[in-house]
Each structure stands twice: as C-alpha cells, then as structure tokens.
Image 1 (tube, rainbow, N blue to C red):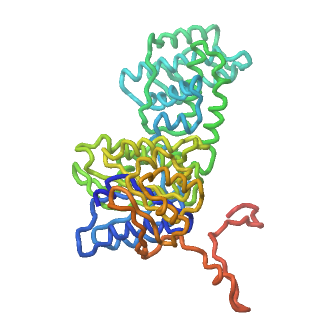
Image 2: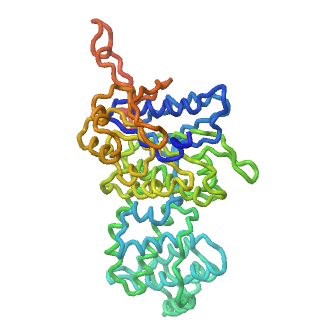
Image 3: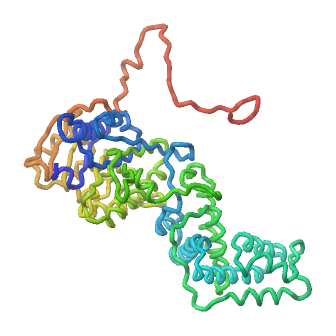
Length: 495
C-alpha cells in the first residue's frame, strides 16, 4: 500500500483496453473493505474529463464513513455547478491566460491587478498611494491625446472620481472649480486651479501596489487596465496604449465568452463572497471543526465532460496549484496525502507546448518532481504515453500498462522500462481486454495480471454494435440525446 500509493502512478493503454475500469476497480477495492478499517483519511480528487467515474464511484458513499462529492463544471453559473472565482488566479496565471507579452503588456497587467486591491483598501498608507494614482490619471486625462475632445477628456475624469472617490478627490472638487459637464470645461480659468489641487496629491517614489487577490469584478479590472495605461502614458510612454491593444482585446473576449461565465463574479453589496478556505474545503472534502478540519468526503469528482480542453487545462492547472501551495504550507508536513487522478492526461499534460494560454504541464511537472515530499501524488491515466510530458512520466514509481499498439507509445514504454525484458514488452500489443502489465516499486517482478472487474462500471463501456444495429422488423429505434433547445417560431427566440 505504501509503495503503490506513496508515489506517482501511471495507468496507460489504448482506448478500450480497460484503463478506466482498472482505476475504478482500484478505488472500489480501496474503499470497499466492509470488515476492515475504512480509508477515511484518503483524499482522491478526480479530474474526470469524460464524465465516466460518477457511475462507478458514487455508490461508494453508501459505505460506512465514506463520502463522495460530485462537482459538475459546465461553464455556466447555474445553481450547484462548479465555479472558480477569478481573483483566485495568481498573477502568472493571468499573464498566461491573457497571453501578455513580457516587455510591455506584463508590466501594465501587473499594475492593473495591483490597483484592483488598492482601490478597495482603506488604510492611510493605501489612501495616499490611491490618491497619487488617481491624481496622475486625472492629469493625464486632461492632457489626453491630440484627437480627444474636451468632453471625452472630462467624462473620463468624472468616471474616475465617481468610481473611486476619496475625501479630497471627488465630484465636489469639480463643482468647487466650476466644472461644466456638458461642454467639458471650467468657468473662467479654473482648470489650472483644479489641476493645482490635484497635483498636491502627487508623491515621489511611490511603489506600485502588489496583487493581493482581494475580490474584484471584471469591470474593476477593465477600469484598472485603463488606469495602468494612463499611468504609463503620464510617465512618457505615449505608445503604450497601442502596444496593449491586443491585451485589451483578449481581456474583452474573456469577459464576453459564455464558456468562461463560471469564473466571472459580478459582486454586489451584501453578496456572500467566496473565500479560498471554503473553496479548498470543498475541493479536498473537508469541513471545519473548531480550529481544525475533518474529512467529510474521501472522493471528489470534478466532472468536466461538458467543457472544452481550454477550460479543462485552466481549471486543472489552478486547482492543482492551489492544492500544492496549501500542502507546502501545512504543518506538520506530509501528514495529509492527496492524490490527483488525471483522466485522459495527454489532453492537458503534453510534452509539446500547449496550444492554449495556460500551460498545465508546468505545474504538473513541478508536482511530479516535488509533490512526494509534501504528500501530493499523481495518478495519471492516458492512452497516448508518447504525447505525455516526459518529466511527469519519468517521476512515476508504478506503472499499469494495458494493451498498447502504437509504435511511438511502445517506444516510450521501452525508454521508461529498460530493466524489463523484450519478451514481456512484446506482449503489450496483444494483451486481452482487462489484462495489464504492472511493474514498479510496489511489485517484486513485472507481472501480467487480470484486473478485478469494477462493479458498477464507469461510463466507458463499448457500444454493442450487433444489438444496436440488428433487430426485428417493426421495432422502432428510439434515440435518447441531451435535450436541445430549439427556437420558438412564434416568438422567434430560444425559450
């Protein structure tokens, strides 16, 4: 038990060879010991990209003391669906998600993320820095570009003072100097006196605010991106807005795309703000008990069948990073083992660079190298070992290999297992279904075995072609598909 679950595990094999059933059988055997101690301290987080494991694992919740939580991610904000607050993302994850370029866009994005927290802080030190940024942006707004009209300049200043007022910089200051919102000017020559009052808030050697991950809305970040660009323009970088146009376009796409609705929170006064602690409690199956946590669920299934690989990569990467950081900070260390089951891992832990913004391979390669000392382990299931990250595979201590026929995949297995005879490896292309080769630190010799059948099976069974194709004449063919909303001809819209 210690040798098998005390290191990273790889379950490999062609599609239909029995990988999912093997994983389900292992977990059912682990939690199905009715006459012995239950594995109440286990934590198995399943990244289920095909929606297979709920059918096989939820019945385990009937066992004494075993809990199974089924979390569904479909990209929406519907009740009961998985949501990921956007302020949980680290600065580096925002940079990857928005594909910010290193020389120009990353500094602007970092400043904007820092401003999202600064504008919500109330300490005297934060107020002084806040007024410095607001004053700098106001001065730059009135300087403006050559083609900006006085009204557009004025409206930007009004928006800034209405959104982030302070005791000294607010709408009353505009009224004091006779501002005219309709024409975008001031009575007499009061613009200069207004700017003099604003300049009094400027400070020397102000440090840029750090990103504190205080809750904010997408609207806040959009405004803060504009303020960060204004701040750079005020310091002489007059072309920064053009350089950041692609960054702003990508952000607006992220803000508007429906599949990212699950991570957008529009906070209103009085809303219950999700906390990182409560979020991790659910992901790790914990419940608070005084000053401690106690286990309430041993298996947590994150069902991502309804979303595309881009979302799978983002969510799996952020969750793995949050769990890894929590376990690194835990005292005493390595006393709360967590296993991440990565189904179809080649889809988001690839040897080649990811074609999406977030490259999940980076965090998983680090976990593969360092996770053992903190009690974080990977259980990698894949049908294409040649496409998997070699850094992850090289750190696996135990392997369960089902039928593999692709020459590239067989070559990868040979490279991983130089101590196994060629005769054993030649059997891999012809292994029957439900049979596998196991080797690693938990077995004395490489062994071919038949996997105990999982009951109930995961939703990965083969189609019964003969039964579905051939039947008696007159028997209707009924097809059950997910309900698709159709346009209502009478109303001309989707009901």
